[in-house]
Amino acid sequence: LDALTRHGELQIVAETLIDVRFVLAARPGTQLSDITAFGTHPHAEAQTRGWVAGHLPGVTYVPASSTAAAAQTAAEDGSDYQAAVCPALAAQRYGLEVLADDIGDRHDTVTRFVLVRKPAAMPPATGAD
Image (cartoon, rainbow, N blue to C red):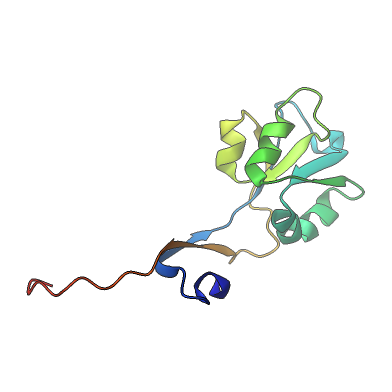
């Protein structure tokens, strides 16, 4: 985030922290034993690696551009993988069944989102500030 503001071209004007919770989701009727490969974003894979190693040993990880993209691909016929590590909302959106909930290795993980803009002069005081 420092790189965004280092040269004065942008300034952070707001931020919010969102809890990160992942599920393992697959097409309805899929069992854990059916899964030979799963897709997810590399950051999600790193944050769920322990759970995956303990519950899906030997299963192949396929990188995806996002957790939502992984869910969308898992829902398609002919996908390279049978399951996705994704947020529950992505599973719901693409009609996937949640096979395991809250599979993150840590339960205090958050993602920080910031709102940035080009620097601007502060408006003059109005007296009603």
